[in-house]
Image (cartoon, rainbow, N blue to C red; front, top):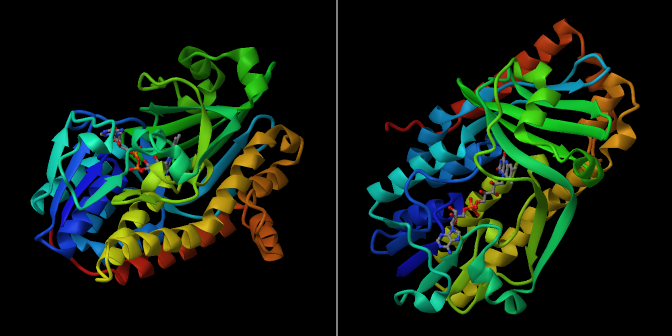
Length: 386
Ligand SMILES: Cc1cc2nc3c(=O)[nH]c(=O)nc-3n(C[C@H](O)[C@H](O)[C@H](O)COP(=O)(O)OP(=O)(O)OC[C@H]3O[C@@H](n4cnc5c(N)ncnc54)[C@H](O)[C@@H]3O)c2cc1C
């Protein structure tokens, strides 16, 4: 099969890897508009569920991703005027650059051709292919050229956000909320290497319009959290999150994947996972030999069903941040509980657990329990030499 992936993000590169693993006779090309090593954004977070899936589909790249990932083992909530509180949980983070390097290297090892600085704007301009995967991100031009056919809908969130990086290494995943004369402004930060952290700043549009903060202003507002270290916006400006959905994902031999098909608000940090799970689902669906139309339909059907609960969670989570000022007067522990239960689906025992694990000793015991769970889960993954 001749396969062309338009876009060398996590979706396109990982699908290229899986397509070659599925059948080394597949001729797979990835077209990426940026030069090698150039991408947007900073570190992204993920959890054990993605690692389990990655190890199942390609243990070699999974092992490299796991080894390059930074582990953090609780959430810290710092809200101005309140004592610091903590939320149980652990996860992993990895720079987008590093993730794409790992995937591109693995793809090349398997014989995928990656053409950088190649930016087709229409599928008609491409050499003939049996399957064209449009994985060109949230602003997909391939999708937009046929948005009527795909039934594309784009909803714009009301909050403003800016994706920054900093050399300040946060101890763990940290939410910080500061009050300004124009209203609340907050960050979601986490380390992704031993020398850098992601720092996403968010506020309501009313606060943003009143402050219109530059990077220097943000360094001042969040000075007590940054330990004198600078912020870097990577040359990108403030945005509103765009929630993309599509009624159908295929048009002939063209299929949407990753952010081109659906975006997921960063408040639940899952867009990369969903993009890579799309790649897994499409590769699996193509392995059933009942023809391309059936494979594409099965892929879309499976992914829409699998993603629905997470998309609802992302929606609830982003809505919580849009209403954040309403929660600001809660006492510290109730505030951090409301933040952790922002999807609104926690059973009552989670509240009791949260309230009883704020002290140093129960917190440490909770961390040990969770790291035993992490170790146990990791032990079940296949051993691979790389
Ligand atoms: C602030 C923020 C924080 C986030 N944090 C997380 C997180 O912690 N965890 C997580 O899982 N997800 C996170 N995400 C989401 C994640 O970044 C995306 O969901 C993920 O990158 C989607 O992968 P993709 O391959 O579909 O698209 P992309 O990563 O956007 O890749 C698309 C690629 O296509 C290329 N391209 C575009 N047009 C063309 C063209 N015409 N021709 C050739 N190439 C083209 C682009 O250059 C790009 O390399 C975050 C997103 C944001 C905005």
